[in-house]
Image 1 (tube, rainbow, N blue to C red):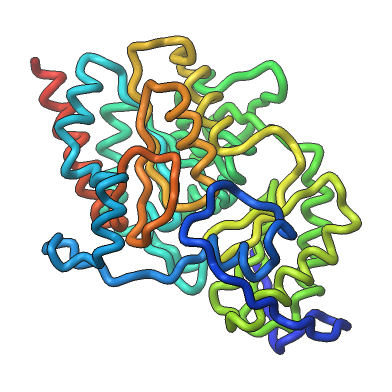
Image 2: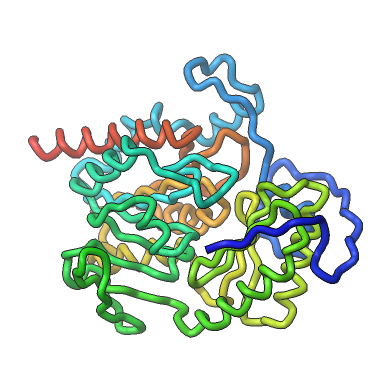
Length: 357
């Protein structure tokens, strides 16, 4: 569900002056809305893409080529990755937008290809596989349409286990049976169910607030609200942030974070994609195991929480999907969803060969 706006200013607001600030090469950490200015934060989280010639490394932009020395291609380093995971239980975590599907102007059209869907299905047949997205579980499921996966929507605040696997995700804090796809029962964990009425209210207010901003769109993702500015003229980005911040002033229990050309309104709770990874590993009985290789593939700043968990845990790897140099807690990189698909194919082939040994 979303709402488009027309015009160039907040509803009933005068247009603020755009802030002109120098964009740092790499953000060292996620910053608050006001830390270095609205425009600066939005630029940091939405870097301009560079042309990358995948088939000819020598044709890479030199800055990108230097960056890949720090974050080597997961395809080139595949042998090293599987050598580390030999004999271990591999668990796969995947972001959706920009990882399994290309980034598109209209988020409702972020369609996953049939080829990618088949590759992800094959992966799930060989190892536990989860999609962790900022979108709601229902929206991600509608895109992916695979019942073999774990789905962690709303940045991990809404977790659903594979259909047909009783008790696949359980927790004493907030867990219930729910009728789901194909009339089967799945276990659901919701980290912030008490915030749903507040999120719905803020969603309606934000629709009204940004209705005068041409190209802006508000999306309700159940436990968070996404304010998309991908189709907004860059000179109007500070207006988008100003309008969003004006609404949030009345909601101290909600906070604002940044993604790729999107502002995310989320509950102020200690939960993120990294916590979702820890929860899923725990639910699989692997939280305290040294015999596990978690791999997380994502492209957004919200994926950094998961990358950080794996780096600090020293048991797995984060893989950043990006054709743009940027700092990350990931260990490796892939340029785009097509390389993600190649990596997953290799991963499946490796697991098949390992099973026959």
